[in-house]
Amino acid sequence: MKKNFIYNLKEYAIKNDVPIINDEGLEFLLELIKTHNVKTILEIGTAIGYSAINMAHLDTKIITVERDYFMYEQAINNIKESNLEENIKVIYAEALELEITEKFDLIFIDAAKAQYQKFFEKFKINLNENGIIVCDNLNFHNLNINEVSRGTRQLLKKIERFKEFLENNDEFATTIYNVGDGISVSKRRMK
Image 1 (cartoon, helix red, strand yellow):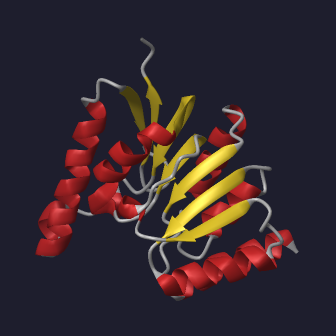
Image 2: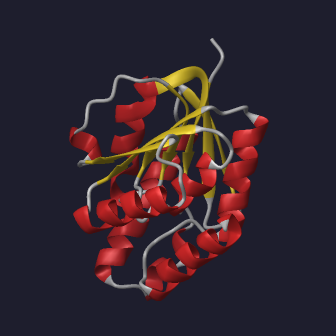
């Protein structure tokens, strides 16, 4: 049931242009969760619940935030169908307007790319001392900035500025991995 359900969810996402983490990125993320012994996760950007469901199978507790009501409802239904309501709490909200007090072992940012730096700065206070912040889509499909529309060019520039923000951050040490669609892993620097 699990494999079939995940496969069907992925197929639905592909057919309906729902942005989900790709296979290589997901495998990398799940390996990070195992090696860092992650038990609690805050996910910014739920979509249909695909990554949350996959992460919850590793016996983690997840709070995931989605701002699109249609996606939020689909995620709720998919999580129910996967019998993971105990592990995953979906919040319908604009993440930048949300106040969360809990602390997490991992914060996974996979939402509006233009807002990554704001998400990072807002939610870093919710990270456990030895936690990690993971951001997906930093290669953004390896698009060439000279071959895209003006709007996409602006987005690519914002992603580049975010990468510079990560590289020059005094509080966090970040490694950007060329897996999936480009994934960053940020850990607090030791004082």
